Length: 292
Length: 295
Image (cartoon, rainbow over all chains, first blue to last red; front, side, top):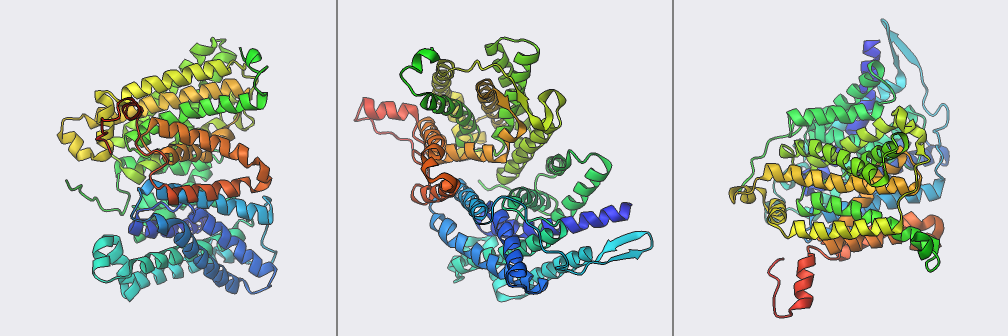
């Protein structure tokens, strides 16, 4: 029972982590809470659904297709709604702009597809259950954990080893200095949005299959939870988002299993507040001393 | 009085005017926390729901008179504002935003499971005591007192915290006390607005006070211009009217609303009336030669 719940928690948590990565990377560079991120995730889930049902492609191809689609969408949103504001306005106006995009995108999808819940078709992914000792594991859970792990390791490698990853790290340290060093800051920011959106889309498709539900307003709560995961891990920190996401998922599942299911959403936030009161900079966040 | 007014004003317009009044009270409360003191709060609907439920239960189950009931709701909200104000001493910026979101969500889930509040179904049969006159008398009172507060020593200290907390502290501003005070007063206004809302709407449910409600209020403050009372009022009027005016586009309403927010922010990044204060307006229109030194 305990290990089963732990596994459920890790599965849920890894999808939170995938979404949280987008929040944390964008935040690390432009200090913006990208409120439209939850909607990018929702669009990813729908793009995957479209590819599977209309074009009838394999689910993994659909996953890649959804990631590519969300990548473009993320870059488009950044170009239209955030770039014009950058540098000449307070962070709060960018936040309101992001909220505007979020309302726009969820309404757009509601108009296109209706507000009802739609499902991924049966048998889109062959599902079987393995029993290891007393532990029951579904193949879907293994796939979600594997895909998330691959994406996260890939992301880490990209950030640590490649040229663009180096540029991203430089930008997150000091945007102005990076600009002076000849880094094309706008391109790096655009790239960051693209990567974050692709990860969110992967999360969206997998959640869509796992919970068998895709709907236009699925992004709001998922976005809030993922954002709190990012804050829990220490916003701006990539490993922090992963740890924050996983621990939030596990705590939520255990809270539901051992406390009460009607307080499901409250449990995650209560834990978050408690952690922040003890460690105001999140689990992995670094304490930045204020300069006068 | 409302019967008298409704002879001249279409009930539909009267209703919108009452909602604008309630929203102004709510938004001014948030403006004090976020616009003036610079503590990003994204859970103002939480305070609103505390005020709404407390006052509704007071007047329905304990037979408390209307004004005492909404005052009770407001005080209850202020108490929670005080509680939420305490972590702000340790947290900053977006960490604080997350705590306020979390707080409002916890409150919402609490009311979803709260027996005397009718759980998810909500509470109906609240006496409709809120009238046009009561709302607007309270609005004017709130505006006057708020303007007085912002122009006082305390008000300037609020602005100082927003501009530079460390500098404010070294200039002798007690940032701890003031941040908690800003949250308490802001939450009080949130609770007051919530109480009026409950006694106008006849029916309340936890869904009325979700995350989107908090966001709507934040939009009003930022759109109008952070920290400015006239700005907040203007933002509130525009954003309360927008969905009504956009009724012509029917189901595309929210699509336009979202796009409107983006466009307004691109063209007026600091809000429509960023940081224009009531007293500045007086100066500007009173004596022309006095140049405002505030930015």
